[in-house]
Length: 448
RNA sequence: GUGGUUGUAGCUCAGUUGGUUAGAGCGCCUGAUUGUGGUUCAGGAGGUCGUCGGUUCGAGACCGAUCUUCCACCCCA
Image (tube, rainbow, N blue to C red; front, side, top):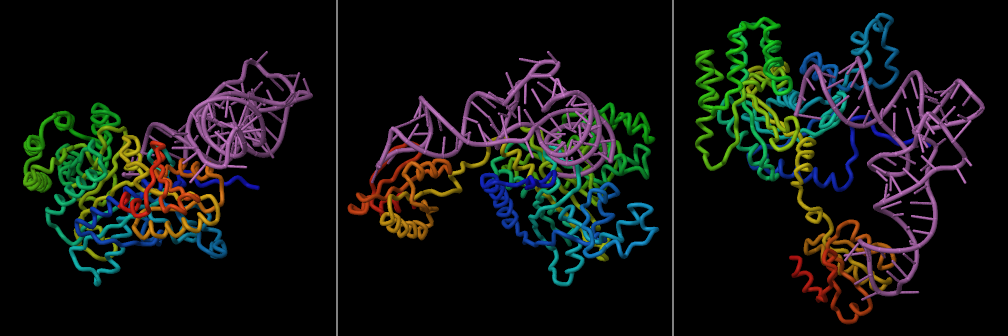
C-alpha cells in the first residue's frame, strides 16, 4: 500500500473550509454582477504559444508545462538534448494557465466579432504557478478577475475603486487600504532620475521599499545609474505623510506636466463626488507591481490589520490583445486573490457561524415506524426551504444526537411513539439543551 | 532555481551521553444512561518513529540519500 499524498503547494478543502470559500466567491460574484460584469470561463490548459513570453523569463519558468501525449521522445533528435530550452518545444506544447488575464486577452482576440464593446467580463477560476510554496503562496490558487476592455474612459478606474469597496464591505473587512500609482508617473520619474531605458528595473527596486527600506532602495537605484541628488529628493517624497492632493503637487513640482499625474488628478476629483462612501485610497509612489503589461493606473489592496501581502491588485493595460493580433484595445482589470482573502478573514474571525450554512434540523427516530413518519415530515420541511436531514440508520438516540452535535446542527426533531400518537413533536435546542413541544405547523412557522 | 528548517498515535508535542516492551494531553470507540448530545466517571483501540540505505552487539536518537513541512532570497495572488 502506498501513502496517499498531494503535490506540494496544493490543498484539499474540507466541508468547513469549502463553505467559507464559496461564501467569499458568492459575495465577489454578486458584486461583479451588480456592476454589470458577465461571466466567462476558459480552459485550464492553454497552448504554450499563448502563455510563453507574457510574464517575462521568470514567468516562463513558473509555468507548469504538460508533456505531449504518446511517444513524445520519438519526435526528438540528438541535437534537441543539448539544452532544456531546445528540448521543451519538442516534448510539450501545452501548459496550465498562469493567470486569467492573458487567457482573457486570447479570448477577446479570438471572439472579437461576437463581442460587444466595451466588454465587461468576470472570471473565477484556479490558476497554477510552479513556484516554491510559502505562507500565502500556493501552486494552485483561485483568482477572481473582472476586466473592462474596449474603453479608454477614466470612469473605469473609479468604477473599479467603488467595486473594491463594495466587495470588502460585503465581506466585513474594514481594515484595508487601496494603494494607487500610475505607470506613466513611474516611467517619468525614472527618466527624470537619469534612468531612461531602465524604467522596469527602477520599478522593481522601488517596489521593494516596504521590505528593504529607503536606504537600500536608494543604494540600488544609484547602482543602476540614478542621479544622486534627484534620487534622494524623490525618495524623501515617499516618506511624507501628506494627502493625495499634496503628493500630486509635490511630484508635479519635480517632473512637471505628465499624463499620469493629470489622470490621477481627474481620478481623485471624480472620487470626491462620493464623499459618503468613505473610500480608503492612498497614493503611493513606490507601488509598482510586477506584471509587465500595465501601462496606466495600477492599484493594490493590502490589509492593514493583518500581516499579509496584497489581496487584490490590478491596473490599466493599453495593448494587451495586441500580441494576439488585435491592437488598440485598452482595458483595465482587477484580480481578487481568494486564498489570501480567506486567510485574512480567518485571522480576523470575520466568517459567519457554520450554522449559517449547514443543516437546521435533524430528524431523530426510534424505529422503522417513526423513521417512515419522519421521512414525510422531512420532505415537507425541505418544501418550506428549511435545510433538514434525517438520520439514515437505525441507531441509538445517543449516536443520533452526537451526530447533530458534531455537525453543529442547532435543532433536533425527535419522533417517538408519543409524538406519533399526539402529533406534537419534541424540538430540542442543541445549544441550550432545552426542549419544547410543537405541532408540525408550529415548527414550520418557527423556521419560516 | 539558491540557502536554511521540519518530520514520533487522527491532532499538538515529550522521549536523557545510543540500551529492555516508545509516552502525555486532546480526539476516537465502548459502557455507566434501552427517550437525550455537549459535562462527569470507568475501560479500550490506535505507532514499520517520513522513506531507503549505512555505522553499531544494539538506532526514534549517529551518518548519507530522498521525499515532505515551514522560512528567507527571486518573484508574486
